[in-house]
Length: 338
Ligand code: SF4
Image (cartoon, rainbow, N blue to C red; front, side, top):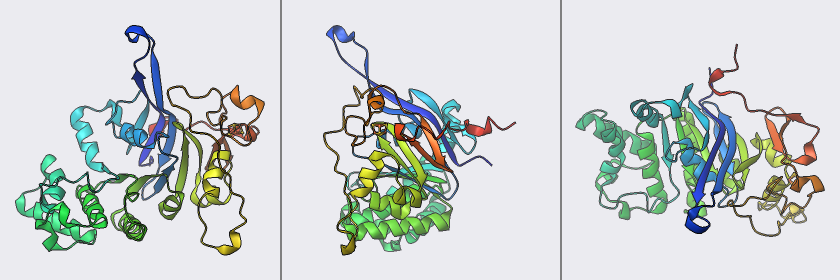
């Protein structure tokens, strides 16, 4: 059986105006050559600093942005090759939850109408079955039946994020793309929402692509982690392995900055990166991280490092690991299976 979702060499470049009469053709390299797979009931944590291309990647995967290159296969089908009718069907299976629970809910609609809306859009059920579905989904996310007739402003940030989850789940999707779903919430509320998502994953057989800049949050929910820097994935590994043995200098610096609630570990070596993230309009040649890398070598500014598999499922793109086996993403849709 193919993986639930296979992302193969996905790129998204935005043209920018430059030069007299816009003659100079330049592009913002928001996402470059992104490849990963995600199985059923699994969570991939996509992590990196703000502006590294995580959100553009999620919107391109959903085909909300037209990809520049690459493929996305969902349950064995290339979604970029589907007709708009077939794509609509796929959209039921993939839903997105946004960061901002304040701005994402229409303040003029009741909770019932907000959660019911995807069912109306996809013409599913009748008035009474939809009411039942909405009530059932609100109960699943920890809200009460009487909340149905209230408006978003009557709820706290955590409750609004629960409403967003109910709306995303009402179509019974297989995959949720959660784009910084807890970063606008208080820390105590964040834990409740994360625990809710972990519980829902088990109860509803869900997979998540969980996007965050917060490595503590990513560790709590993910089975495997992909680290992005300036539009590219620089390291992918199972969750415990990446936190205990990070290989890429960028991953090491991110992990070293995660606070540890243990006073005995106060002498931990923290790697503080110097300089700003370069512009994706003009990414550095060679390794894109070389302008900030504390272990930069001469080759790093001259040659792009290949992705290499250092141990099963642990892939890193860095010249420090030039002895590893070169890793190529598997062709999607089982194309390489004879
Ligand atoms: Fe640092 Fe070079 Fe590795 Fe890039 S390739 S992360 S610059 S050591």
